[in-house]
Amino acid sequence: MVDFMERIKWEKLIVATQETIYMTSISVIATFILGLLLGLLLFLTDKGNIWENKPINIVIAAIVNIFRSIPFIILIVLLIPFTKYLVGSMLGANAALPALIIGAAPFYARMVEIALREIDKGVIEASQSMGAKHSQIIFKVLIPESLPALISGITVTAISLVSFTAMAGVIGAGGLGHFAYLEGFQRNNSFVTLVATVSILILVFIIQLVGDYFTKKTDKR
Image (cartoon, rainbow, N blue to C red; front, side, top):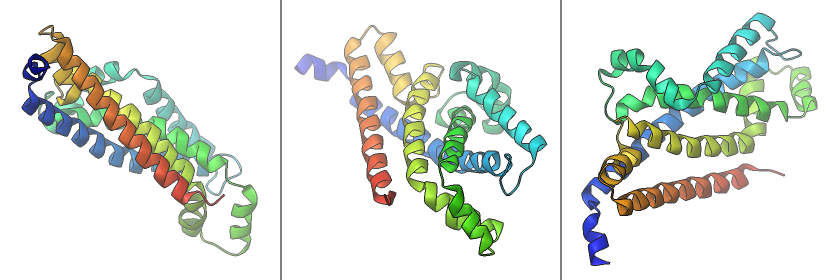
């Protein structure tokens, strides 16, 4: 047990955990905002909705489908020039953020669209018949009515982002993935890899618990 404790570089583990939490938190916030906007546009510009516009809907759907289909590790490589221009480096936690956000936002956008489609059309029509403006329909009907599904969706997305940070860590983005690869795999130290894995699992469990709590709190059914 003493040997096990000595083989773990606890200071580096704490820093790696902080980096993973930082990358996940920033990317979740940005993904929620961008994904919500894209999801609303997908829904509102679709046939029969208040901003019906087929050309715009096709363009947005194509963008979402393309970026949602690219494997994350390939997306990181494709975004190297953009990341270097934006951040100035391909190393560190900040360098992982563009790929994390661009990779997760389209995925969440589809979940937002699905959540909005589940809203009873009668509720929207009733709001329109009462003279509600488009902004009121969006912020007082669509978002409140779909809130439990939106929270559930961002919870799933946040868990995916934790795994994305681990992949980004392998190519130098920092975090628990980088710690597991550099201190564990490359140095043939399975204990380090195990501890890093357990740390990631704990983060995932916490995210799931928090997400489930707020989903139940906002569910009016």
